[in-house]
Image 1 (cartoon, rainbow, N blue to C red):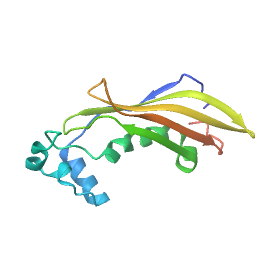
Image 2: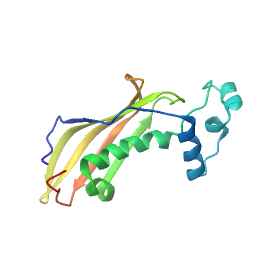
Image 3: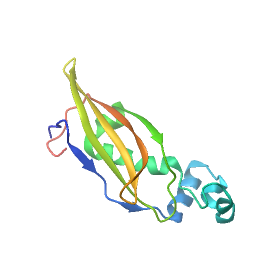
Image 4: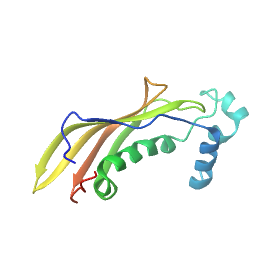
Length: 141
């Protein structure tokens, strides 16, 4: 499917649950108590358990994969900033906007603005993505 400048894609909203955080901690080996220990987290500057930033960032990557497929997986680059913490029970949604498309050596370079918002309005991750469209897209993409 042809991509155009200005197109906006959004993920489904998901609510971050402690079980997701626990599973991510186990899979990643990141058992920092700010993510797992309610008593510890309440005494921190955050005032509660914080989701791993990479757990939240994964939703942006999932959306990019659904839009650009193998081109994102093999030829995608992200540059992001983590702006605010995400807490248990926060609802998050990722947003991708195509900002430019350049033809370079018969291949398209697509640049996007990426963000993840919590509770419908507060940016928690902002940045850019670059995808080199090396592989032909299928008709279903």
